[in-house]
Length: 465
Ligand SMILES: NC(=O)c1ccc[n+]([C@@H]2O[C@H](COP(=O)([O-])OP(=O)(O)OC[C@H]3O[C@@H](n4cnc5c(N)ncnc54)[C@H](O)[C@@H]3O)[C@@H](O)[C@H]2O)c1
Image (cartoon, rainbow, N blue to C red; front, side, top):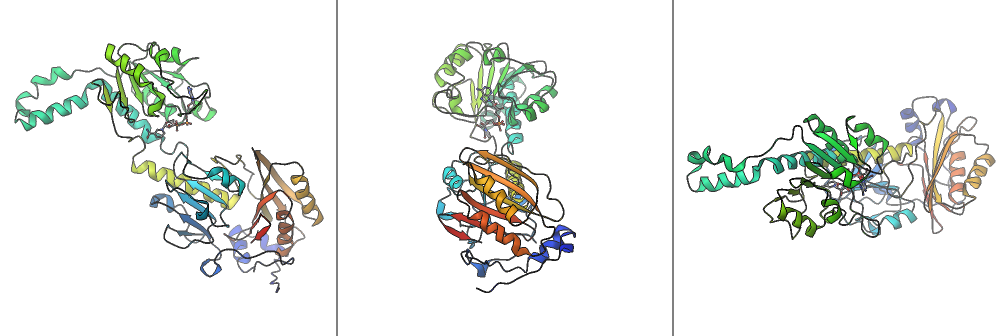
């Protein structure tokens, strides 16, 4: 096997990262042991770029986050045998869609049930989502729902249409307004159940409309707490939150099974509603017990406004049911695609993990100048970290900083290694090979500059680079 050596002068490391990238672009990736193989379809591989495979139509605003000179975007029809990451919306991802080079998958949206997440975890691939990217769109529809539930707007619009068809619109426009009287939001009380991305924004904006805000969320995060209006009255139970409220917005996840949230707005909770309370459900239909809700609507002036149709409720005179429109805005699609793209860029370029559904949050401070960054995915078993550290020590490589995190069966490491005294890139490739071959290691990467290089994988005894 021919070795293509590239002696990297240490002074090159002192130059800005982008200059170092160019230097590494010329390095042929071959290995002493001869056990390593090239991967994918090198004829179509643009060296010096990360290759991103996309499924579905991804918002151009999101795709524009990938700088052209470092990212090669290949959409559904284009060959992408060397993809480093996959970006998708609702495509039902099969394992065969995932080339061996893939190191990350991001869904533009919150749910990931179109992705075989447990299998991706086995392959050492973090799956990311975009929590909260559509929160503003949903919050705006909740505010709209409050107005729809207050002012008989829908009935009024339908009435005017019917009058117009009869040629009576002008004649009756003033006379009939008494039929559609309503109430104002100002001074009323809104109870927000679930103060996450959507709930916290709803609480904040409703307060600015002059409403009094109550809230209930036993799992309130610090990030969400900081967004809440400081006048919010936090209740210690759902019943206490809804009691006396004029409007109730539920913004919690639907969780099946025991201790889940199926039918959580049931008879018990509804018994604490004021008779004219308006329930806003822009979370999930299954959270509300339809029979109990129908009984409530039958017996009083309460209303139900939702973007989830339910057989018992969609046609009730006191309900306003919309199609599932909560997140259907251009801005929400742009925000989700942008967030997914940023997450992938951050992961590929720095190894940082945020918003993953199967990997631990992991973030190391910026790579010091003159350092190469190793990332290692391994099974969460004792001894792997020690062997890794030994491998660096054996090569006289100094670890400048490192982080090791785990989640379930998987562990993830990011290590910055000093390049001092090591002016030949092969010394790093050698240690990468050793680490990749440690029992329990699933895959490794070196982040040293050139986009799309420094990949290795150790799954089922096959080594790729
Ligand atoms: N209508 C739509 O188109 C649409 C779009 C996006 C999201 N959603 C729904 O809205 C829900 C909320 O979205 P988000 O982005 O704000 O989620 P989020 O994860 O940011 O917030 C959910 C909050 O609910 C809290 N919570 C969970 N169980 C609770 C309980 N039993 N009682 C009180 N609080 C509880 C959690 O602690 C968390 O703070 C999602 O789960 C989703 O089902 C609907």
